[in-house]
Amino acid sequence: MSATKFGSSKMLMLVLALATLALAGAGMALYVLMGARSSEAATAAAPEAPPPPIFVRIEPFTVNLPEDNYGPRLLYTGLSLKVADERSRQTLVEHMPQVRSRLLMLFPGRKAAELTAPGGKESLLAEMRAVLQAPFSSTHAAPAIEDVLFTEFIVQ
Image (cartoon, rainbow, N blue to C red):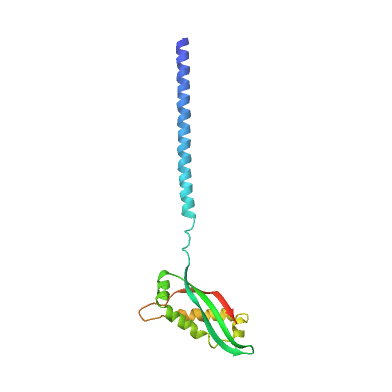
């Protein structure tokens, strides 16, 4: 009888060991599956990164301003345009002489005091944006300009 008792305790230990291994395997599988789902959910829930902004640099230029109490005045300015898409960037690059001409036509009537006054630069930026959003030719659509930014601005 002792041989049977010893054999049944071996059997019991073997069953317990197999049950423990099965539970550990099931727990590990559950952990891996839940981790994969939570990372998928985090990836799906995270918003897609916005595309980087597209800027078009306009080389600085110098413009004569009307004389005032201080004598002849000059404006030295550089600009960058923030555009909505690659098509707009390409249009502006292809028509850069027209871009510069349109901008240069805005400045001659400006007085230095007007440009340096509070709100003077902001109104000038709004006018530049309006002038540059007009189509450059009948074959090209108007560029989508989101912002006009001063990179340099000196009134002397």
